[in-house]
Length: 426
Image 1 (cartoon, helix red, strand yellow):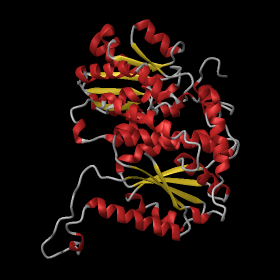
Image 2 (tube, rainbow, N blue to C red; image 1 turned 135 degrees about the vertical axis):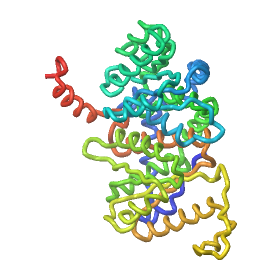
Image 3 (cartoon, rainbow, N blue to C red; image 1 turned 60 degrees about the vertical axis):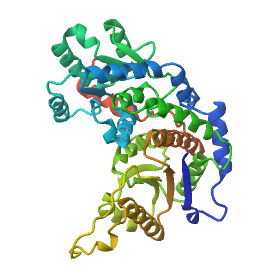
Image 4 (cartoon, rainbow, N blue to C red; image 1 turned 90 degrees about the horizontal axis):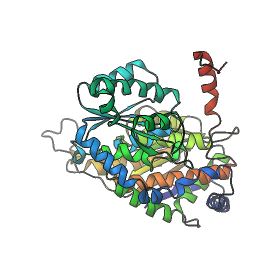
């Protein structure tokens, strides 16, 4: 379903073009489990596993929340919330009106943000989905303590338990122990799937289903997409993307800017930044992932992209079909000089703007990779997730790193816990 357009990038490579033999070797390493981090490649078969195991229970839990709650608080950080938020914002539409409002907490330590979420919920009925493999990550653990207390104040201890859904380790950890002790319903963060690759597990699917997204369609599309992305050929879009971005990186393009002309794509960009930043940024190497919202950022970051240091490449995500239509209206007297556009669709104007920007940036020395799916719907979301995950793993192996660990994340935690006076952290 995903298509990659390399026409705006190949001219920046040598005459030989991308070396697909590197992508082929990386794909073999991934598939046969011979590379570093192979114990965290369960995401390759995750869609089928979820369909065979937890999907029915996820949908049932979401229906209970939709019936008894006007709001759901999703508590998590990093991969425990970015994928779900990306999906909900990308796929929000009038057809999903009437679904509970979904709020995200535990992804920071701001007292203002916490109080704003509490105020937004107000006196409405709400439930909590706390997502943490261990249950001890500081930000979500503190947030869960707060919202668990609010649930108990509102519904009593017994009532609160029925409104807490824990997505955590299957067997161990502080959150698993607490949920089991109190009888809360639990879903699993798979042992062989890292957080940034977990959106197609209960981590992402439960909040998505509560928001009215058809997660059965998402999973069915993901199963199909993962099968197609196992193609061992330069025709594989994941090979194309991984091989070209690595070739551009070796040529001095150390920054990749992900853009999309759909404002609702913003948190997909945030999810993508974590996926590629945590997977590739180690051992002193890695493309720096950044994102822009287009066309808005053409009036801010556009200057830097066009005329700044030639250390960037662009990847532009697009949807082939608009979900809705709107034509430019005619104005009597043409006071703003825009009647030459009257009757033309905003979608057409946007696509022309996209093509014009691509041409300008390429002429200014910025390679451009196009990534497209047919529609901004469940199938399109699933295809983008599977594509970027597969390409990320292949790209990471091409660059010689373990795409599935994140050792650098622990450095700040050690300092933070020591400064906070945590027992044993001296």
